[in-house]
Length: 315
Image 1: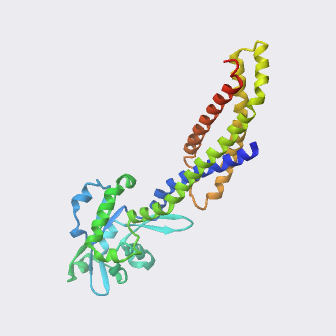
Image 2 (image 1 turned 135 degrees about the horizontal axis):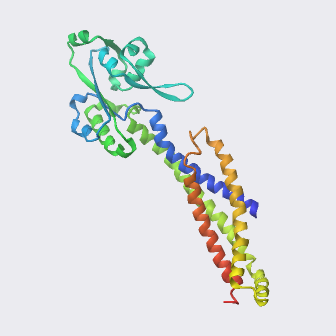
């Protein structure tokens, strides 16, 4: 019975820990796959008051002009304020690209291409000098990129601006595969992992209820046969405080042994989730604390019920 309880304990604590791990993984994965908290196409038409209310830590605008085949950028602006980008080695890493680097490397230029409108992404991108850019006859527009202090705290406000950006640029609404905005990436990951997060919590509580109930009923089922033993101790003059202390010690061993073994299983078993969770051991104290508080409540309830049965005649 104790072996079965220790296995269920490991499953329950593991499910709760992994569930919390998925909850923490959402902002981490969002951060690793996005460069800016917000970017606005045709920013000259956007409501800048909404952007100012975000109190951005970074607010840059890059001018661009376009014709039928080419999108032109002022290279000097990127030399002064390099473009934030992500490159993939063994893990995603953030870097910056100057105007010269973008002009000489088509792969790096793709980092800028992802920020453009769908109809612009298929065109050639050209970095030109400031004088040449000013001589172009096409109308100028702006690509605005923004960083905020705490994206998770301000995600709702950012989401409203993203929705306005889509309204002002209808082609974004038609492109169902456009997931370049950080808010859209967060929403996608949240939808993907929230179900797994719920399953972790649900299974954790379900297994905890199962194991604690099995352990409780195992202990209580033998309580009737222990009545005579405690009556005998009572008759020979054993103090009531010692009898209650003995009960607590007996039961704590039955709860503590499978609990410790199950916790050890979880600490080793979390290594199985390194492919799904970047830091499976981060903040592990929280699920352990939640679990052991609930486990302690079951222990106290069992002690109270057991004491009421075996010491009933004395009372």
